Length: 294
Image (tube, helix red, strand yellow):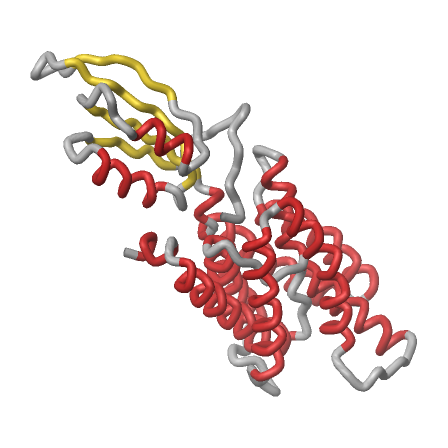
């Protein structure tokens, strides 16, 4: 049911906005009250804001990190426009505006909701990871380094958005350790690690599956659908049923978990008598294109 909803354009945007709301709430309720940095492009802008306000003693009278984040997104939107698709850019712009709104209207508690710092990091990280995974699965993004992560993941077969996030934030939090104090850097890093791990499990385009389809229809339209509609290659071979002795055509295709719903629906519609086997979590290398922003 959930996968069907994800393939409806309006529902994807609404779910993406819901994910933005969850992400904003996690940051404002669990990260900011602890004096931590959220990571990514926003975390970088927060660090710059702290340096400008505390060390240069410049008080701009507005949230400098929000302005810097908006300026940083301009070249990233251009990168996404040419490499990740125009629809993705439009959805990302909508989500970026919504994030600015939610960050502004969700109240920040004067004191942490949970007194234990580690518990705040775990709750905030898990909620942020779920939210970011939902946002990316819906073909949206909050902007920032998510765009760079998606671009690099599309180019590199073993790359994921979560791994890129952890790599960037390792450098960011090392800078926090040098500039501020160990407590801020360590707890910020703990928050981000949990967020990145949950993100990779929630982001369905990162989860690859192998599908074997068994059909007796020699003129099946399934190979054409797989290649034309899903943009995936398909391999076929002839088999024989062990019980009936009938000739069977076996189709093998590798897709992401996000694409499996469309494939299953096509199998039921185009060849009702066919059946398929889905194996999740396979390792795929070589010439396999990752569809991350559909």
